[in-house]
Amino acid sequence: MDDGIQLTAQFLQYEIQLVESSPLRRLFATIFAIMAFVGGLFAFRQAKWWELAAAQAYAAGAIGVSFAGDLITMFLFWELMAIFSTVVVWCGGTEGARKAGIRYAIMHLVGGVLLKIGIEGVMVHTGSIEIQPIPLTNIDGWLILIGVLINAAAPPLSAWLADAYPESSPSGSVFLSAFTTKTAVLALILLFPGQQILIWIGLYMIFYGIIYALLENDMRRILAYSIVNQVGFMVCGIGIGTEMAINGASAHAFAHIIYKALLLMSAGSVLYMTGRRKCSELGGLYHSMPLTALCGIIGALAISAFPFTSGFISKSMISQSAADQHLMMVWLLLLAASAGVFLHAGIKFPWFVFFQKDSGLRPKDPPWNMRAAMVLLAAACILLGVFPEWLYRLLPYPVDYVPYTASHLVTQLQLLLFSGLAFFALLPLMRRTLTISLDFDWVYRRLILSLMNRLIRLFSCLNTALRNASSRVFSIIWTYIGRHHGPEGMLARTWPTGSVVTWVVVLLTVFLLFSIY
Amino acid sequence: MNNRDSAQNSAKKSWLYRPENHKKLWWGFGLILAATVVVQLFVSVHGHFGFDGWFGFSAAFGFLSCALMVVFAKLLGYLLKRPDNYYDDDV
Image 1 (cartoon, rainbow over the protein chains, first blue to last red):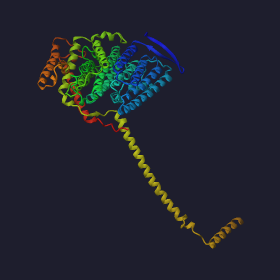
Image 2 (image 1 turned 120 degrees about the horizontal axis):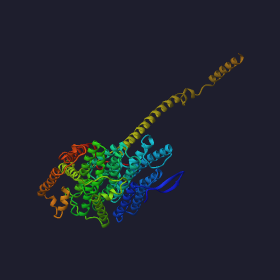
Image 3 (image 1 turned 90 degrees about the vertical axis):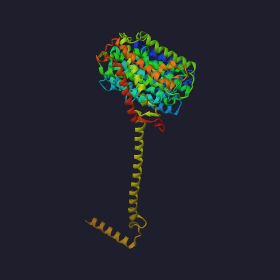
Image 4 (image 1 turned 60 degrees about the vertical axis):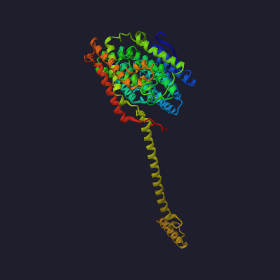
């Protein structure tokens, strides 16, 4: 597809640009299309037809966002994704999936509403619906940023991701991992490149992902937290905002979609074959599922940016751009984070699932289509790592970066292997427990709920108190009235005729006197 | 690295789980670790900030930052961990 606007249409009184192309947009659309295909291959014999249909519509929404030439089109495709991704979550088919899907939908609809208000504000104030960098000078820009960041799983509203994705079906999580957060990354690159605040949001996401993944027991939730972590790297790169950083963020999104899908396929295969998802119930599967284990390990090495995998050539561009800008603190944190990624995703996931203790499970490798999809993606991880120029050619800016220097290789290997040492040395500290970790979703799943319950209880107390008080007041009034007007009351007694005549005479006299004077 | 070693050794059943081999695995791992650091004698590592070119900087930094993260996560766990059926009575 050529650069520039390809297709326009009339919508209300705006001319919307349905398709606009550029190298960056093509890069994202390409990887979304690849994921739709390989994900479909992974899923098509096991998943229900409605899950496949929803997943493909979801992918279509993501590609639509990639090519959207204006904010209105972007918003429409954005909501399309929200709807169909919710359906994909529901296809998990359990009660947990149903509830998580509802929470997921509410979160994304709220994000969509904020985004829409922001877009309308921009339209009213500037009269333009073009997709271009938006300054954070007024509320419009902030609302759009918040709307996009909700989809990127930025704090504090990041809990939806680890809440919803692990509830989907084994194949559903593969689709979910690819599209929503990465379209948000694309939108951030297009709308907010170089916003300083994104650096810190990104760093927070990186460490949030690592810490929560270290605490987690559910294997797919570990991977879900590591999505937040990886998107954090991209958001940080967008915040740095140089050509190298934007290149790095885009390359990392491309590489990340591949290896994260591979990891989730590997976890999905284990779940599909064993029906178990908790690390404490798994272990020792490498022997009976060698291919799944191998692919999982390749994915784990790629996410940890091991040399000769795709993560090595993309993540290092982001930290390099931080060094080039002399952001020492950011660079050091990114370095620590790279080590942390190896810790939580690179070793923890394969170790607890495929090695660790022998759980006694002897599942086979999954059916051929699942194996084929995993092998394809594993090959892609390694090929991109060995031939980085294939990916570098697709990036939005010309690449002036050589990942494979002896110095880089040595330092990266030291960093990763010694974090591996830390993992095995501190293994006793990481014994798996049957627990989940509280997150911000506690606020809307517990705090608000309990506040509501308390409010309801308060009102019902108030209600009883008011009823009691009013009935008491009423009974006092009743007895008072009864005393005077009741059958025995003074005013209700039968009076003798004589006294009545006397009173009438008095009244008439008074009248007479009034009329005379 | 342990899990890669073991993938190669998986031909022999449960080799990995025999206690007498744990020592060998640790030794192998230790040798690889030492090799990555010793190699720095022959490769000039040029840092951007000065200190990052020090001998074994990445190794020490990797180990310490990971240890810190694990301990921090452990401590945070006391605060945040709940039984995994915590939300099951959701309405």
